[in-house]
Length: 127
Image (cartoon, rainbow, N blue to C red):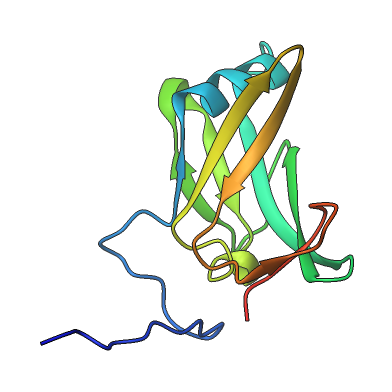
């Protein structure tokens, strides 16, 4: 018998507590360390914004402090990844990677919730 279960995106659903909300590859972690340098309080914040032709864009930035309702994930060496609560379901199960091709490097978001992306890669839609 074939399993015909279909997973759907529910922006109001609770985060699955058994699975990591977001994972960060070693390559991305090294990239974040370079960005943050010797900062004593190392934090990177991930959020989303309405943007482009497809709906959302990722916002990833170094911050001194997050917002009270941010989800915190401790990374290696005391570094923290903060995730905006309103973005948590959009980025659920996303892998953040840093890829170098030739002399160029870029952050890539391997997000299983994405159903479409714009042609230029600036924005995405989750359903």
